[in-house]
View 1 (cartoon, helix red, strand yellow):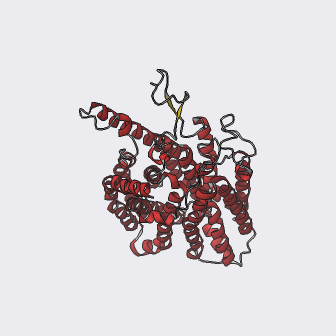
View 2 (spheres, rainbow, N blue to C red; view 1 turned 90 degrees about the vertical axis):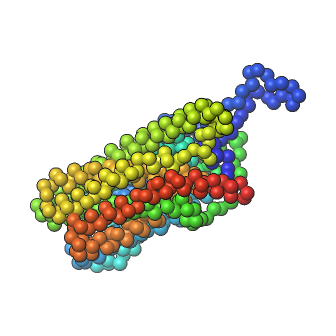
Length: 509
């Protein structure tokens, strides 16, 4: 395995003095200073992640702003709700598949050009949908696929950026900030969609997406630096052409014009990650929770219209603020908790190493990647989150079944949004920790599994509700989530063994 994988906190050791002859004792003031993992300051890292997070808004925003318009578009296109829901399904399918292509390219050719290509694709697709005749339902389906191909990959590209610039000790906090962008979509998307549909018609949704994605594209052209380590190392290598921002706000004065690119790495097929047992277990666990989460958010508009017929499109959009607010708060707090858990575990391990009478490992060796229980750190709160998740899911379904006071399902949505995003953020951070050199590819594999599961559930959830009723449907979803909870303990036991095998295999190659 590469040195940067084994020692995530440093990329090398530099001597401050000239080397002395082998037979001479080293001077007393000779030291070794560790170069930082990245040349960027912490505030500059926050800025880079914030820019990536702004682009990450568009994947969920493009999906969720569309939901309140489903009844209106069904009337406009003279199609059933089920057929318009099919446009949601194909979006989720492409949302899962397209990042496998874009993410793999980003791990090879760079984050910045793929970000720009994705946003340009999204902008053009939105123009196409806004101009689609209502007689051409097939064109709506096709352009929704293109729209997903452009917007969905911005999320996985951002996770790759975090893996490029952040050490494991700080990744949790950066993921917390980064996930704020993707969580803004579910929070404000339906509200914007309801307001735009009521005031300007369904086409205004796509003109809005076109304008905002174009603005984001311009900002990225101007400010986003290239971060892929195989191209710019720790950020000190000055790239050329499209890889350079027009206005270099970060890293100024710390880049070296004489620095050469790091040696290239052979192509690694991202599908090989599906051969890693710990990665596969984590992907499946994430997919189940994400599918249940998506099933609930997708059905909010239709179930609330049925249970509370006095609500109009704008009111329905406002109802999404409950789950979106819970997700925003969860994103803010989960990252800090993950970083605190990492620091506490590191301190405990170093203290045990210092107190070890046999001194089998020094404190510094004890916290290296091969000895650090990263699975335990990231998953320690998952049983609590999933327990609350299950209770809220079942309770939410019965509130809608019995048409309880509107406040009841909204309060449960807040709690459900918090624990849902807390669970998904913890597992997403662990996925990057397991294969940090393939940040975008790992995130793309995650997207394939979870979006496929989400698309499958969305395509059948109306049939399940019609057959079982709302209450028992959500009890079923809660039971499925609970059934997969033991995966967390399996990963804590299995993960270190799988990582050891990967290290041995990489050392031989």
